[in-house]
Image (tube, rainbow, N blue to C red; front, side, top):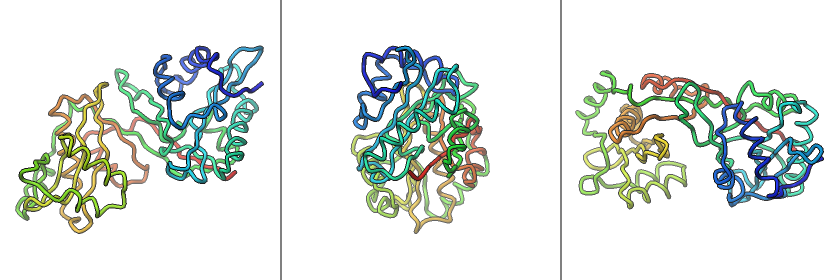
Length: 321
């Protein structure tokens, strides 16, 4: 039978996760990390978390979340995970868990179920063929997993394939043609370097050129807290950014994004900023970088030029309820 979340099952659910979810590459959990990811998440709702029991033994765990204040939240319910014990890997059992999530979404007034990166429950996973280097979020369903095939059979639409890319920064160096591009931009008055409040101005004006409210909030906060930001400037006026430059405790590079104001495109500043960002991370002894991009995004060529490798694929999926 299926029951909603009860903390008395927490240790058995964690044991299930550490046996089954790790097969698809997800990071194992301790009680503390499980609590941080699920139970302490502001969007956790015990009525949207389900446990499959067989003779009072935990055999499955499914969790979703909703929230009107998250992207698409007024219409979408987000599927965070469906994990089943290997002996119960059947379409029928997956459908039991999926139906429980979807029915809960309908009760809450949602009209679609999604698996994509807007989900505020960030599930970490290990990057293949690395010493447990990890990415902090899965943007969809791992391609070639049982769940992926099941959701396709259930009518979920594959909206995009997100490609995970990885760079070991010990192998990074800026190629000569990027250096030449930077020199050419310099002749036009452009520079790409770390932000210096005494020499650079115009952060807010530059950010107003983007349709990204998160950047408009986050980047000025990083600047005010003296967190390094790589910027592109025209004679001191900021026209683009990359960053922030933050080394996480696990050795991974964290950055919010890269952008060049539309009025200053066409000078190669985007690719210059990206390579200077990689160099900035290398300079603070960051071990590796990982990122996602759409599988048809031309930027893949820039990432590969920097030494990034494709390491995993995730499907962004949706069904109208």
